[in-house]
Image 1 (tube, rainbow, N blue to C red):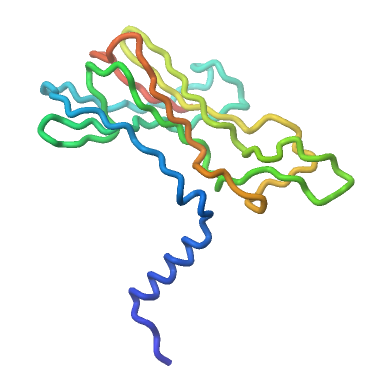
Image 2 (image 1 turned 90 degrees about the vertical axis):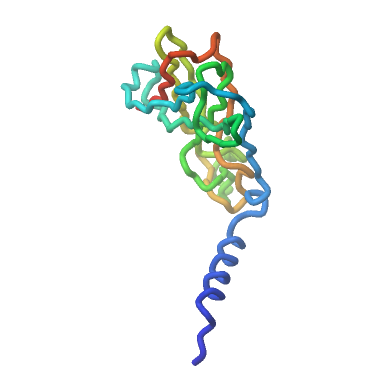
Amino acid sequence: MHQPPRHIAVLASLLSLLLLVPASALACTIPIRRIGPIELEQGELKRPVYRVVERSAWGVDASWISTTPRLSQFVILQNGRVVHGATYKRQQALSIDAPGPVDGGWLYFNDSDPMTPTCALTGQAEWQLPKIRVRQMATKVRVAATTQRTVGDRTGCILGPDQGVRPCPNLARNIIKLAAPLGERELTFERF
């Protein structure tokens, strides 16, 4: 029996995967902020430092989880070089992403049992949109991304893709304005 060439089989597999992804997810574009072109002095470009801290450092209870924040911006240098995930000492507005737990975009909907109450969470996702938390100090700028399960009664609810999915990933994107330029302060992204 004749088998198709390998590249055709790979293309067919990719096409079948695309058919499984909802069209709305393919249409979801999340542009990344571009800054520049700017001229930087030697050593002015900075990247965040990642640390693990105790939950108590952010004053949240056990219902909250943390995710890893990202510095999501392109810094375009005067010489044309483009750097992603970095900042510079004079910057005062940082573009930060906070991804939520990977959940496939599933939403709650009513079950088919007439004996259970109507789902109070219809159309909502399992996880709330993450919250970006910032603490500005003399020597550092601390950032954390936290989220918690959607609060509410799940009686009569089913979580799944059957009634549609969220059109975009569970991602919060904020431009955080600092009280003063970052300067010599350390930019710390924290998880617990």
